[in-house]
Length: 465
Image (tube, rainbow, N blue to C red):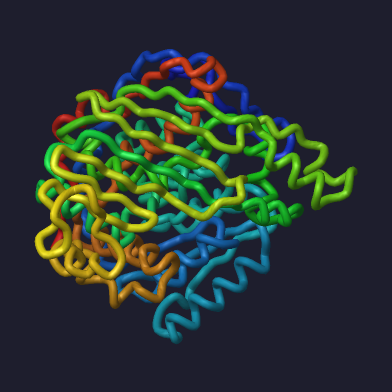
């Protein structure tokens, strides 16, 4: 990162972005609160020049990146021009798939790059794509995005947007300086229930918003089978070396948009965080792998479950949890509470003061199950209504495709994106800030204001028709 020496706002990064398996540091360090000088133009409501034909490149197609390629390649006005991955079999597989989708009419000039860690740099320099999708290990997200923007591309990054506060500031500064989009692809914001809750909040159905609950509780110990390549190969080292909420954005992104955080109404202010003991991963490794196995050589320092409380500028609260270890059903919580009622997920349910007409008499009983069809008919987000049939065959019940569809739609029409660079940084900042709080016995940590106060001028996310 070329500008790192002249930025004095952060004397010690909360995390390094070093090697995955060796030299990785999860030690939380003291962070200064000095805000760096703005180097470019604010990107809150930024709309780029229309791209009639979007030349797309993909870095990392082992899993999520390939899914994004498959769906975006089907859309009008797109052309896959380059694919880069460390492994040649991944690159060749997705090159063929893109060519098959194009049926000889497009996606037929794809350049491929594989075999070494820095091939992606050659791709950017030689191909000069309009857009780059990044779906690699977490430590590579920020460096790859920064270089992509510097080479003239808009970037779309898998979650989290970065692993340290320093990298997040680098992304903000580079996006502002280059006037290129830098969006973290939080797909859960496009789930049907999350979109409906957003619509209901915007219509004032539950009154003034007070409190939210968000989570990513998803037992993923099975990923430890990936020892030489794959998600578990690099992600397991994060569990071993870091102690906090390492994956906050799936639950947090939607509730932050309900509350209009970083957009006119309110913003993130501070966080406190606590972790349980770290027992599950060590126990799982001991029971499932030989004594001399790689995983049994690790000291799993990260707590199995982390609970954090966020306080916003106007005093609202958000409880956010993370647990990828414990044997329990999947949940994102997805709860938003207001002065007139509560919307909650897993299972989806609604309670309103005075009841829901024709279904309940008061707020002491949930509307749930088959009763919800009445609310879907009344409050389904128009984006879901318009795009559901077009995207339902994509991943995660259609929300992946809806997200990619919206990205392409906004780029082709010159519209602002549904998620800006600042939101991606605020949502991802929970990870390093929670690590700092846990390391300091639950001490309060302040969120850096990545917008430098300009969130007050950023328009709320529209209910798009």
